[in-house]
Length: 426
Image 1 (cartoon, helix red, strand yellow):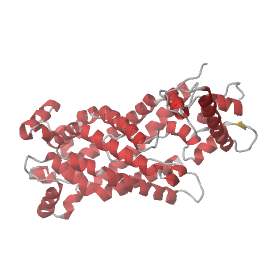
Image 2: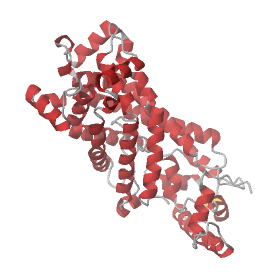
Image 3: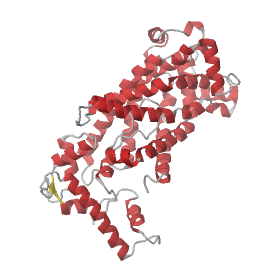
Image 4: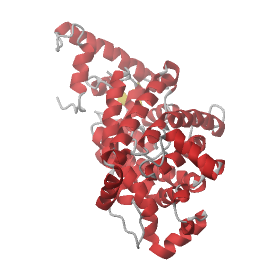
């Protein structure tokens, strides 16, 4: 019939209409599914048709998406409209709307918008991403905490899966230099020789433990900053979203930063040096005082801005490029395109903020280094540039990039399973 399906859509239609659970639809079930689905589509159509003229135009699509906190240009709204407009009038009437969505299991406008929501479900092990956004409906129904829980679990599994690469990265950031070059394979061999295979996961416990408090603080702070930065009753603009996201990231990082320091120390620790997280905290406090828990804080805070800004900008550019080139039949890009856009944008963000991440790790690890390596942030930059050149600021970036695709894949799969388990999506 020329209807383009997204993966799993046919199965979703059958399972949502299959009342007697026999794995198929008889005529009555099919009839009932269409009637119920049409009712939902009619409600969505009416909510989009702002002037009640029985047709939707591009400005009405733009306005509705803005109300859901998603800024799009007039051209993007027209592209979405074109994907549903059969007769070329640049208006969508009820019949065109119904025909487009009748065999698409998206039930409401929020689901349609979610195609393009820049989600932070993809956990790449960095803690400086912009927080997730939720619609008013999700906030009132309590769906937001389930999504946060699913995201936290996805992050925990993904970080555990890529922990060995993360530990090698930290080793290379701190100990690798021109005179002491540590290769990827050499780093792994060194760690296994020193503490066995289990030592590859050293520091992972606290890395997983800090996901939940950080996610919760970031989300709460984000909502408050959005209210502060947006005029009463006004719409959240992209730049306000970026500012609110960066401030929320800074707030969350400030709250859990001592855990970041402990994670670095545990990761670099030798066998038997620390007997767990609390022992590590006690030893740092006794030897170096409370100030040690905030070493590297400045480069960490500065790093949030380029990461979040570039991540959002690249994602928006990729989204617009896809919509203008490929959105012929549908505004739904499919999961591979979304994962690709998210992965590329976060990787570009990492590239920009990586030197600051390296400085942060070196400063966090200072107590474990020789006296000659202890320095201020500017002193460290000068030392690295003088001894190793510009690329010295990118030590350890290879394992960092190697973990992006497995981290994204693991976190996405776990997130989908968790969503089903928690009843967010059937």
